[in-house]
Image (cartoon, rainbow, N blue to C red; front, side):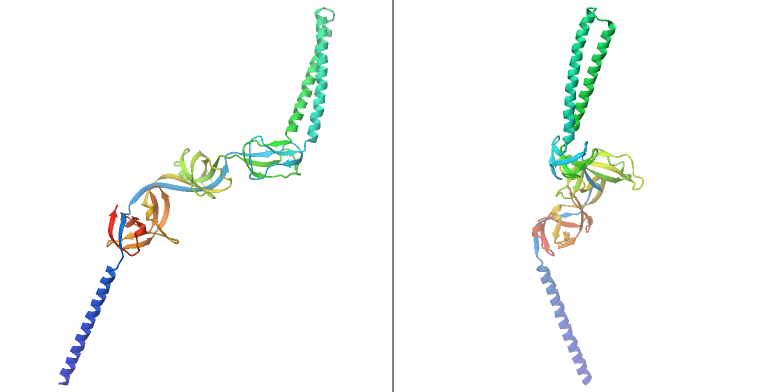
Length: 365
């Protein structure tokens, strides 16, 4: 009898446990359904599949900005710099006086040469008059041929002496003009190697001027790309201190290859931009085509330092997925990792998206 009571009690406990377990299971199911029902709905967005696209295969080379024309202004005379009217960074025009050198000695030479020229001119004039008188007498058979020849020789000596002294005077004048140092080209002063009061000597560099208006970037290219890099190719240059890429053109391709680095040199012309020489630059050269994943720039979502897109799964649930970006082009932004072909992402209506939301109305592209 007691055994039956015990079995009856155990059966009752088991039944009660099953009822409680069923209730808990139903409760969990209700909560799951409730959670699914409460997932925020997203409408008015565009969803597109991820596809492969052909893009330019870009080779990036680094180099240095150079001035299109550089002129080193050197002294032609010896003397003390008496005035210096320019500083580094100043713009100058061709023919503008940059500095002056003490010209007192040169000026004295010019004055002395001028007096010598005047004296020689008078001697030449006297010889000319005397020659004419002798010529008249010779024509009248008053003097002999020998006397006429002697007068001819005297006249030639006077003429030659005048030309010699005049040449010395012109040289002295030129030497005096060298004391006023002028700009050989228009441009900007990039280097000043002397100060007022310093001694200048012939051949001594005084200033460096770089022409403005256009510059070029000198870069080294891998020798294996020799057949793909041609004169006239349009490229893109990224120069430090500039807030935007600059269009450029390959102006010159050096035929020789450096045997140590296995590279050849290319000059890329940058027009109508005043760049300072010596700046670091990167040049992007298209060398062919390749396939990659491109997404519209509108699909890229920045969250602090994170870069990602909103991906949509088969049930329409949206999740923020991290990606690694590559180069941007007119066709979109390259994705290096984080997406695969046929993934679906939101490309428009990003402002309406809630991470973890459910898309109930989409515009498929």
